[in-house]
Image (tube, rainbow, N blue to C red; front, side):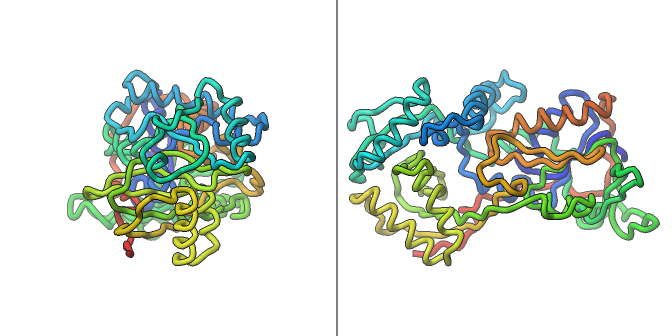
Length: 407
């Protein structure tokens, strides 16, 4: 099989790009090394950012403008009349909260963010606060933000369901580069690992050994940390990419639902909390400052730091009986991003493009730009049957579904 477009990476960016490519009439497939959503996608907090937290310092940044335009695109998809139908996906919350301590600098920081995004942010009276803040003893101000939190796995399932036969499991282990720099083909390992006796082993191709040799007119790489390996294969060197590690902290128990950011005088949130169901309990998934600081700590120290942060912000919150865990994840970005990139990043090389969405909410924009790259090189030709002896890719799990919990 020689599809027009091969997408490497089965996270949110790869899935969105595949669906849009097929809707436009391109003959496309996606390859996932491990499982659908494995890595950054299912390790994210599911927040569809609108740029509020990036305006807390009062700076006018391109990132806030672009982010503000994206939630309506997602909302249309969830309603079933957008560029893709995501009506089967679940939304945990249609709004979040921004809370600041009683310190006057903190109030100024939150106020700047509120003024910058007046249509999306408004202050709440104490009787309208979420139970976690009201009963937990928070002292300060609370704002409501028009930002949704989604169940990321259900989004992946809604994206993948109509095209499962085109999402295959395979690991790119080599690349064939023409003298003019064009990527002619990739070798994918995994041809003999599944489907039992339904598909006989492929014959060994000259110079390729075991596996599939797949050619295409355009290649789109959205494989997060795997982009480093791809870049090396394309002769670009792994230094084009960088990783910024996080240690997400989790606690589970009979916790109240909470979604949002605890801020201070710094524009970066001290803590970001989202809530997720697990076997009759609630998991608080902690990001923001505690996850960034925890990356340089042991798990024990990182959990202790998160506990201290929660006790300071929620002095009356009862954490007895809760269990704790952590999850290491790398944010993959183009190299030398001293600040968060102002949107998705794409690096072109011949008929291949390496992509980093940098944020969950950017998936539609990345797909749009990646397919604009492909459209300069080929015309849609319609679909051909998928006849590759690779196993179908299965869905991955959330971090809190696979960690070892401790009291």
